[in-house]
Image (cartoon, rainbow, N blue to C red; front, top):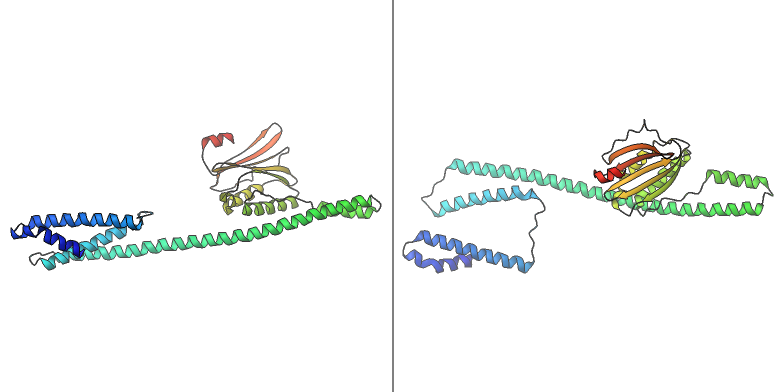
Amino acid sequence: MNYIALINYHLFSPLLSINDTALFLILAGLTSKIILIIFTIYLIKHLNYQIIVPNKQYLLVIITEMIVFSIIGIFGYAGVETTASYNPLIICLLLIVVFILIIINGIYFNMVYTEKMQYEKQLQKEKYIKQSLRLIQNISYDIDDKKHRIHWILEHIKHLNNDTNPEISKAIEQYQSKNTYQKLVASKNPVFDILISVKINRLQDDNISIKPFFEINQNEKYDDLDFIDVISEILNYVKRNSEITLHIKGQGIYTLVELYSENDFYDYDRCKIESDLIVKKKNIYKDGIYYMKFLLKGTDDDVRENL
C-alpha cells in the first residue's frame, strides 16, 4: 500500500507544480484503486481463495465496518485538513449507531452459535442412538437365529418321538405356541428395522398378526424417529385378534403406508393421529378387502390420486 502511494505521488507530482491539486487527487485515487484491484485478483487466484458467504448474516458486520471506516476517515481528514470542521452531534450519532450495531452483532452471533451447538448435540445424540440400536439389532438377530434353531430341534425331537410319549409332544407344542418364530424386519434401515420389529412383536402378544411387506430403499428418512413414531401410532389402532398385512411403499419423497385384511380390523373412529408428516388418510372397502391408507410427507397431486 505504501509503495503504491509513493509510485502514484511521483507519477502525478508534475500536476502539483502547476497547482492542479484536484486533478492530481482524482488521477492518483483512480490509479491506486486500479492497482489494488489487479493485485487483489492476482492474490485470490494465486491462493485459490474462494469468498463464500453462506447467508446474509454478515450484513450487519459490513454496515458496522462501513460506519467505523467513515468515522476514521472523518477524523483523518480533519487531522490533515485544518479548515475542515464537522458537527460533533453527527460524530456522536455515528458512534452510538456503531455501539448499537456491535451489540446487535454480538446478540445475533451468540444466537447462531447457540443454535449450532444445539444442532451438533442433536447430531451426537442421534449418532449414539443409532449405534445403540445397531447393537440391539445384532443381538436381536442372534436371538432370532437361536430361536429358529431351537424350533427345528424341537421339530426333530417331535418327529423322533413319533407320539410315543404324548407328554413330550404336548410340551413341545405348548412351547411353540408361546414362542412362535418370527422373521425380523430387514429393510437395511437399522433404526427403522429394530423399532418396527419390536412393535410388531408387541402386537403379536395382543393376538394381532402382522405380515410386513416393505418396498423401501435404504434412506436416512426411514430412520427418523418422528417417522417411526407415526408408523407405531398408526398400528396402535389395529383391533385385537386381527390378521393384517402392513405394506409400506416409497414414492420419491413420499411414503405410502397401507394396512389391509379380509376382516374389518381398524378402529376408524378412534384413530385421531396428529402429525405434520401425514398428508392424507382414508379407509376403503374394495373387492372384499378392508384398507386403511396413509400418505406421509408430500402434497403431490399425482401421488394423492394413487392413494
